[in-house]
Length: 300
Image 1 (cartoon, rainbow, N blue to C red):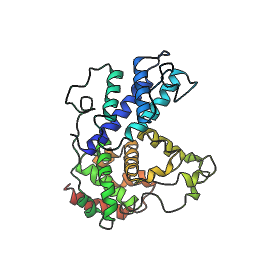
Image 2: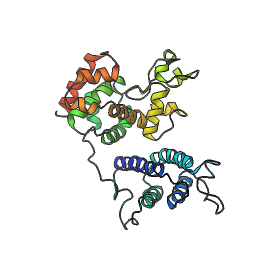
Image 3: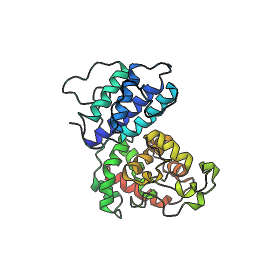
Image 4: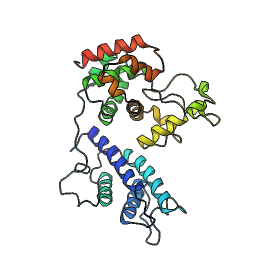
């Protein structure tokens, strides 16, 4: 049985792969994969089985061309797959695996083989403990750290923050940005971002709606849209989700990956990592102090 963290990673990988396979299909006729994707979509949305006289997607996305319906189905499936909770390997996860096999024209899953395992290798979970995090950020609220810990592990695996030096830089920066892991959204109201065209805040109320959230505060309509697309979550419709422990961590990884900060971490380049995240050098001394402790804790 895979660990809970491994299962979350597999679900994200499967969601991305399935969405890619669906949207790369440019045929204008329904194919077997469409029927299977519709079946999966109905199960994950708790909908009844598709009536025999109704085409795939027509119940969820009526009056759309097949290509448009596939694209919308792909987006919704990403959200639903990464949102699967608990250990449901023989039910929902099994159906996701079955759908992948249809789209990939792969053989049936061998008996006794876990869903996803044939497509995605198991990964090494970073040996970063709750106590390690509390050593790095001693003013952190322990209960908060316990909530964040599995999601930080998942984030570091997902975005290849996979060496002690990369992990030290990442944890130092997110510890500073979040006030020692204690704050998952900025304390200010966000009104200062109102009308900021550079952030994509073009509608009234966008400043407050899309204020900074997450361990590295994602800010603005444009960034919420981009981050949500990668994570498989509609953050424009649900902006406060970004302050929940899972997305607070994953969004920090999304930003870290987008800005190629692993490369700078490999060079032990605190200055340019700080400049990329902050746009300046605010809090530089604290970031440096967090980094020095993180290196000691992670034995860099």
